[in-house]
Image: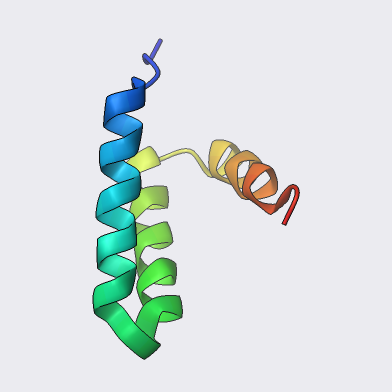
Length: 60
């Protein structure tokens, strides 16, 4: 069973993502799609990825 990230690690991930999105300028959508595909490949679990997509869609 995998462990959850602690708050400090989540903040680090958030900060890194925000910096990367800022760097992309008008290409932020392409960057996010590429990142999502890389994350899906690293996760190696299509069903789990689908669940994460649904979770991210909530309350937008």
